[in-house]
Amino acid sequence: MFKLPSVEKTKDTLNVTLFFASQSLACLSDGCGKLFLLQTEGRTQDICENAAWKVATVYQLNQPSLILHAVQCQETGSVSCLLLNITENDAATSVKDAHVVHLELITFSQATSFGAVSYSCEMLQQFRGYSAPVYAAIEPGCTAVLVASERPFSLVKGKVLYT
Image 1 (cartoon, helix red, strand yellow):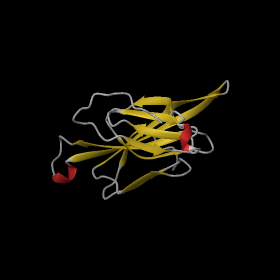
Image 2 (spheres, one colour):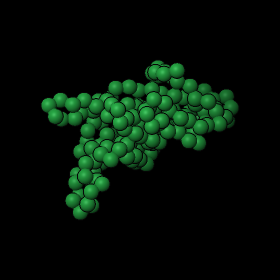
Image 3 (tube, rainbow, N blue to C red):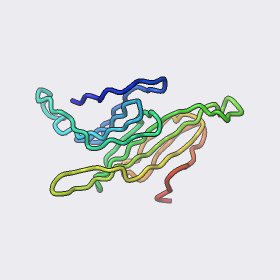
């Protein structure tokens, strides 16, 4: 179980989204601009135990976002989370460009110190396009983002790691 901290709702507030990255981790977007990485030990066991989920880390986003996908990399233990937000394009010259679609890939690296596991934001990649994706996901090996959309997306922040 997890209770979100109270936040002030604005006109840009989105719905809360939750995605289970693994059997013991979940990503939660509060719809107001915060991304929580939660340790969910015990959620796959007997439901009567009511184990409280613990916050592993919190990342402040630039915009309220929805979680499209999240996955934990088995080799490194890092967690990647793919987020979506859509903003109005003030410089639009046509209806086709009226909105800008932003995809953000945030990767939390795992560190172990004295037996305790901690996470920190390691990498941020941002992609921009002009149509919402029909499908978007992180490849199971955490080495690629798969996007199906009517119009292309381009990398605007970060770097291409593999070619």
